[in-house]
Image 1 (cartoon, rainbow, N blue to C red):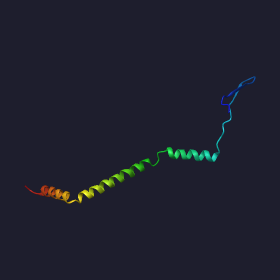
Image 2 (image 1 turned 90 degrees about the vertical axis):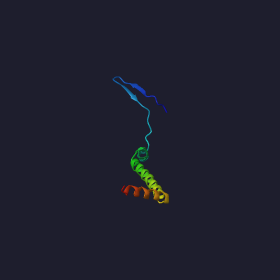
Image 3 (image 1 turned 90 degrees about the horizontal axis):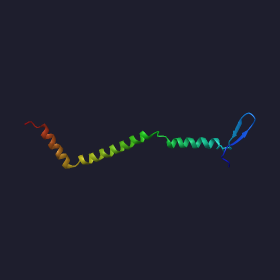
Image 4 (image 1 turned 180 degrees about the horizontal axis):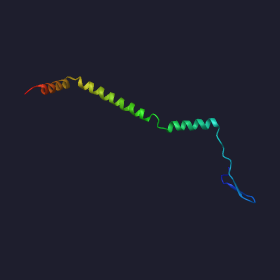
Length: 88
């Protein structure tokens, strides 16, 4: 396929003609461009980030629950509350 434009000269003006460019079928071009836009867009990125942060927070809360149920931690907290509430 020739990609260099040709120039034809007439008596009044020069006319440039370019090689024909194949045009894809309308359905395929629309589908390809919409799919590409969907993959390249960042729609929903913030929602995914919020979901990751919430899952991390739930995991951390679960770990704290397991730690707080231990007898050692419960004793330390009880002593802390008693010393804070005692007068003198």
